[in-house]
Amino acid sequence: MNPLLSPDGPPVTHLGIGEGRIFEGPARVHVLLGSCVAVTFHLPGQGLGATFHALLPSRAEYARKEAHDTPFRFVDTAIETLLAALIRARVPLGSLEIKVFGGANSLVQGEFGIGQKNVRAAFSTLALHGLRVIASNVGGTRGRKLVFLPATGEVFMKTLSETPVRGMGPSGLS
Image 1 (cartoon, rainbow, N blue to C red):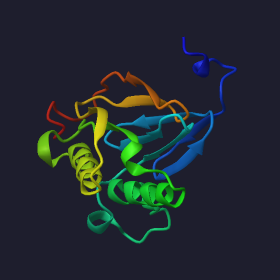
Image 2: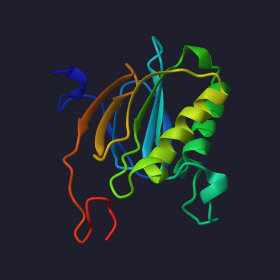
Image 3: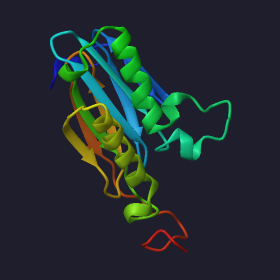
């Protein structure tokens, strides 16, 4: 077992929907994902990492001017917000190790599911900045639980069991 995951390891932060931040030094970041997406950023050798937990793909398409509409609620603005903060911290973006997780389509399958739209938003926004994803685990019909260690860039992932929604057929439609 990784000593960073032991009960005496670094402090735990649980990221809820619409939350994101930069971490300096040891931390354990827990994120529970269904159709939501998390992107992890790690600067090797510096003990620095960042991540978010986004619900919707695009602020322009889905924003409703609600009080809880933080930039981290949307995949595109979550990436933009963290990249801007990393640039202000003088992090060379080309040196970042980037990983993408989530985007399950448990209720609506295929290209119309919100999970797939979230995944596409993540990859396209990162590509706009010329950033390369080194690992990903996306799509499918099962949620994921992540433990991200920003100091090392390690991500431990557990695929959650599939739980059917009562009253729904196999396609997710009644």
